[in-house]
Length: 365
Image 1: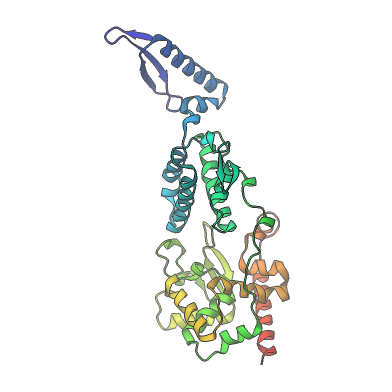
Image 2 (image 1 turned 90 degrees about the horizontal axis):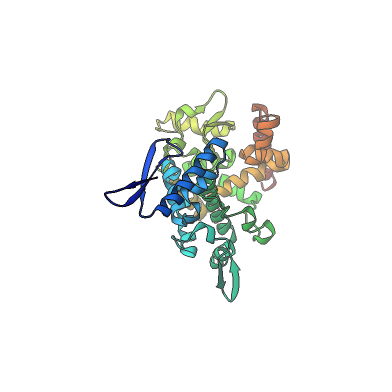
């Protein structure tokens, strides 16, 4: 500590704990300077002993606000995202949280905060759930998942020490409404295959999606929000009946086995000179689904075609076969720690799908 005669202030010189460059700060009184010096002496001791407590002292976690955490995550993570929809989803979660707690609320205050909601006293994250009771519980759980991801990132990076949202804050499985999923009937499959009101192009698109079980944007040729997912001709291996797709959450493309029917459709489109295998975007796909809905009177989405694939596979190949067909994460442990899915397995689940398809079509003939 040194006193400056010109200003009667006290100078404290210290090394920045991360850059190790010398820094200087000035204080009006000697007692303030002594407090500052004690802080930096403690930080220096932490660095020497390997203790990470210096971060708490130096960065002052206790003063961090909700908005500061969100800004940090935006700058460090979301700004690097290639998928605009992912960034938008996280921003919606942030907006919903700020709407309930406010941007300037201290992180340390969140879990002990109390508030009357609809005549009942709620504490912490229960306030968020109560004030979003008009939204579906699945949506609230999705928001809480994203918010937990953001706050945990800040905690791991040393910005905060509090665990803001825990796994227990989400609605439990028995508290959620049952999933309303479409169960296909053989007559509906026949309508998709034979209805005279469906054009050749629309029928081909429908077949590709329910026979592969792929998600909508895993196959579309144009994806303006994530160019990396776009499917091109070099992703199609006609010799091995394989399509290389970028699955949900994936970093690299994986190969999915396709039936001869699917490959025949793709070859037809290649021969006529289409620029890409599925030479359209998600909006065009939605148009196809809408036209087929109107023609057949069957209400379904593109994701329901993925369900149709699983419902065709499971009777012959079981639950595991259906999961293989869809490439679901439920088999990730098997893939990574026991045995990966072989080409033969992929061929078997496609055969199972075709067998059930034939049985359904013949039963209604």
